[in-house]
Image (cartoon, rainbow, N blue to C red):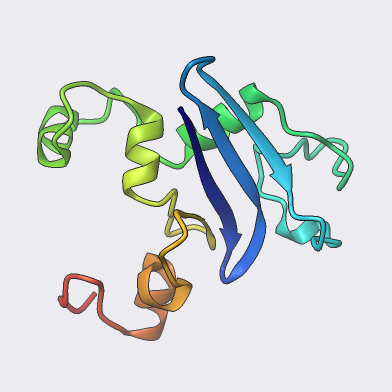
Length: 137
């Protein structure tokens, strides 16, 4: 089974992250309209030789995913996993659940049905808006 998510920077489509469950492998395809390296997220792209021609490999994508979620040794991880309905730690499943969002930047994963202004946690906090759950942030 193939899973695909659009990597976004705010409301800009940066590219597509695909996970092949049978091969247990990630791939990334940069949006051909991206012409500025400022839209390339750290870790996913090699910042020692930053280039739009660079093709992130499985390891780059996996490191980026792991950087977007809490570490497996975090205090209270069992409680968090339980609340998420997970029996074990899986960075990709957690990343999909939190849409790959971070309070540190504006990159996130869109499954195709989300809008930046309605779901990105950093945007919502900065603009004083409410979350999907109706609670002020």
